[in-house]
Image (tube, rainbow, N blue to C red; front, side):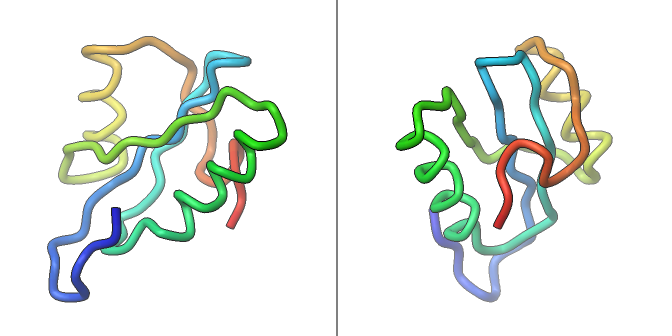
Length: 82
């Protein structure tokens, strides 16, 4: 989802169901490029998804994500690239 330039920064979680990993991307105010990268990966057959996530830092966002979901955290940009 595109965000207004004056919007508060947020984090994006990219998940890869094929290998059980996730990355925390951000902070950002516009996720259009990430959404495009995920769609490209999906069209190539990968089970990749993205979702906005809550947290005041990347570490906080990862902790919040792991309270509800499982996975191994990988470095930003490791699952899909802009």
